[in-house]
Image (tube, rainbow, N blue to C red; front, top):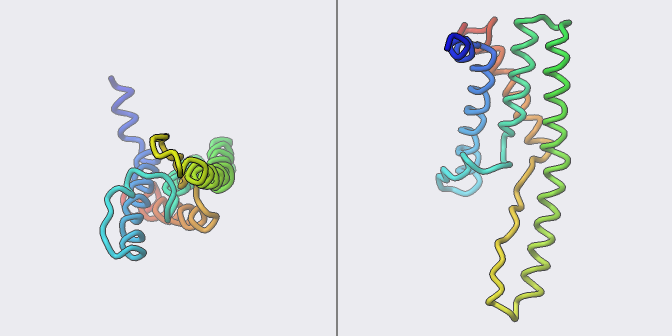
Amino acid sequence: MQDFGAIINNQVLLVSFAASLIAQSFKIIVDFIQNGKINFRVLVETGGMPSSHSALVTALATGVGQVQGWDSTEFAIATVFAIIVMYDAAGVRQAAGKQAKVLNQIVDEMFQENPEFNEDRLKELLGHTPVQVIVGSMLGVGIAWVLGPSGLLF
């Protein structure tokens, strides 16, 4: 049980999760500005502005750099991990979302005359645009500097 206490007292981990939660919270504000109404559903949906995945992994890499040193192996690992996650969010998952949109259009057109065909639509908003990833990563770095080991909170 001592290990669990060490995990919940890990400043880098806590700040990383805080960055993700803050980014998710910003999605409510952005969605409200875009649509004129509060939509709490954006808190659990993928995609959107800013990327909480990017905020989490960049806060993690920044925190590791602050604690272990910018020339450490741990920082290198966290940075490579962050790059992979952000590439996936803006590349692979974004492309999958575009493909889902096309497939949904095909299904809609092909089965328009056969309404009893009731297949679930594919999720179209899977990934992030590059701007969403960049804003999320900047948010993550900023939160790590403010709240992290060498920041205001700790």
